[in-house]
Image (cartoon, rainbow, N blue to C red; front, side, top):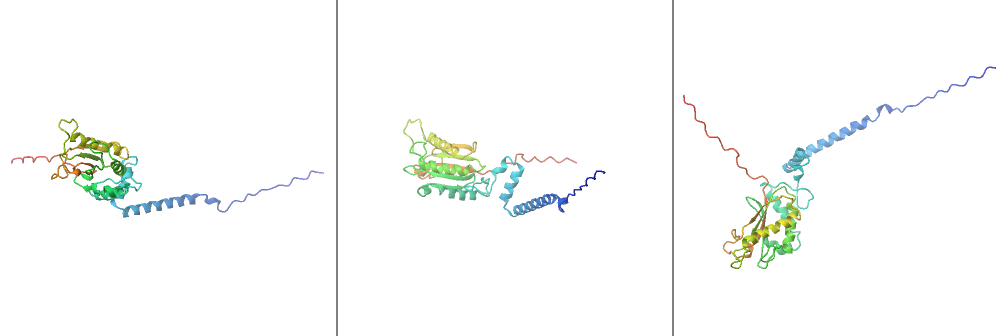
Length: 259
């Protein structure tokens, strides 16, 4: 008897109906979302202020450098500071005034602190009283009040790309005759002490570009040369874009050729 033939088994595989679509729709959707986000960013930039537009442009022009120096605000905002020019120095003045109000005991010192926008930049003056306010009497050691104010200024000014100038001034009362140490040394030493305090608490390396010691040659009250307010420290935030002289003088007129 012949052997029975083994049955033939056929295996059929079922394919999902959507299999032919694959993941292409995900790529297309991601491209669409990206394009919409880019559109919204462009629309936001068009409606933003010139400062914000300049900040974004500065980043794309130099992603690893100067772009990060441009921001939308300063003084406690957590952002980098704006580049202060003649157009927005008043804004910096307002922000510094608000920052100084947070310094302990500022109410007791506010009459001795004056912020003024000048042709050179924003000048912050810390003026002494008869009993001393920001420095110990007769020397260049900052008082506790002086340290607190200098630290607050440094924390805020250090966010700016602007250069800083620090001046020291004294009254006209001289030291004892024959003294080696004079008002010239005192004014310079106080300016330098302010620089050290500020560089240790927020100012960037190289941000201070100049120290000036005037002694009693630039009195705040010339009619009262020994008045306590003549003894002062001035911290100046210089404009970042000052007026520049024309590097090339106009060429002289050429003589006309004779006919």
